[in-house]
Image 1: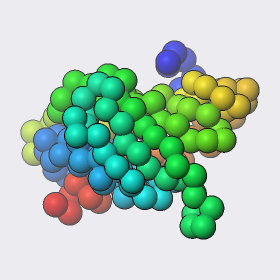
Image 2: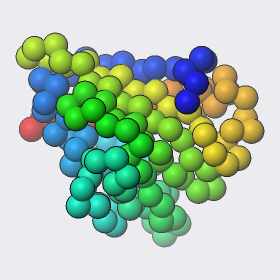
Image 3: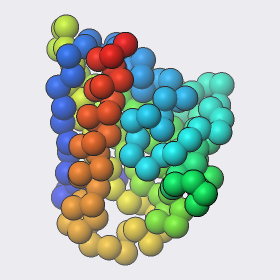
Image 4: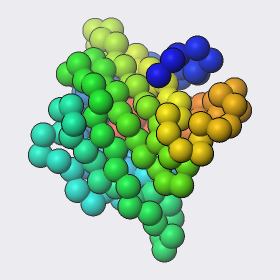
Length: 148
């Protein structure tokens, strides 16, 4: 993903990076912090290794669509790059980075469409829709990590 014009959302979290990473590496928690994910159906045993997938549903009951998210790259404890599918919009690349700041951490997330109809929308317009969703995702991630 080219990062030109892609909005990075940042949030300070009041727990060490390892605690945030514990949440990210537990695939069953995905629908608790990812906006739009409604439920988990399965998590590959080797999550969050490269190639591992989360099998989730998006939408609201009874209008749920089954889809998946795949790990494209990972630096355990520091960074994960995901290919998040969300039919009918297509797929997005999502990068979550965790900075260790001693007793606290700083988390960054950036996302952009990489496949499907979503790429037809001009990037600035896509980012207007993506940024608030990712801001809420980091808020939820922080609540989970800080509440552990």
